[in-house]
Image (cartoon, rainbow, N blue to C red):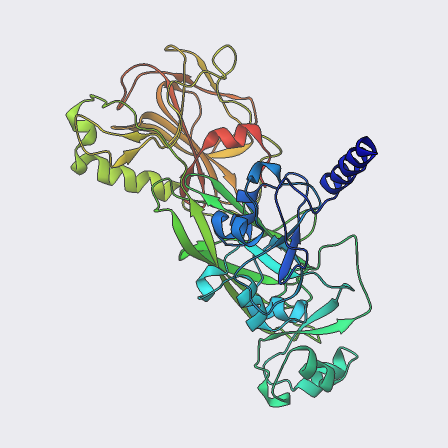
Length: 476
């Protein structure tokens, strides 16, 4: 009999351990508060970061003694959200979302969203940030529309086939007078498009999608902003007060390419767009503007050893005018996109993947402060090695400079330029149209150098960016 009792107790213990609620520690029988169900790949630290709580508070709220025993399907109480009940889920804030617009999309009070996300300032609502939501029993679908200048809520409702009372209710307006011109409103609908993203919640429905890549910008990298919308829009914009240029994309929509300076301070910056809607009804050429915080992260560039060069090549009296001339060459933005696909290497085998110095490295010349950075990608190769055009373009400069030596610059359209420095021979002239793979010069050791090599630069929107990216991925 004693053996039977021991077997029964052992079986009960096995059953208890095998249930999802047991993770090797005691847990509350009754869960009080908002909960998150552990998913594949989750860690306690990752969950704490996502919900903006400390690991210790999360462990304490759930009586977790061993974080390594977290089990798939476990139900965790998320602390710091007293009075809120339900299942929590997370997604990412996209460019084109605001706290108000998301509260309208999810039909959830803005105050509730602010509490769920521990927000104390609108600046915290940046693109790429984690968005915490209460999971809804039934998905809510909304349509987006913009109130044009001089238009009443009643007129908008009639045009959109709805009624003003629904607009007032769905957007938490105090009355029909409370909607402002240019404001994007949502109305609930039974229509849904499961194969398409719901679109930027703070933009009019005409704008189907806004894609920012990468979501978190990086020092010295190329940023791509793509707006999916029908023809007829006029677009402008700025990134940290630098103008953006938009071009119609052959695949539909509009694209802007912009470089992020390699020495810009990591942190928060404003990305703004201004749109003039089509002149035909119902849009009637109405203006729309949107601005949102985006984050620039460090490129984590290393520091090169101190370089010893000829003093005249770092004399501001020489470098200043040459720098101005070089950047002015790369400033004009031409509307025709000349390149296709990935750029080819400007140096052929065996030196096509030999880089004695990469883009962005912090530099000191003749013992100066590390206030310089390497503005391009260096390729190995002795004097006389062939230099090839990486893509189709038009030569806008071919000549001798003090710092850059014998140099060439090619315009590829859409604000994209490439530069070739320290050549022994230049084999093209200004105005020449070149094709990908065409011989344009020879490697040399002219200008500010410590040995023969090709220094290759790439400008996007007037900013030097890492050329290596353009050898490994397609832009845009």
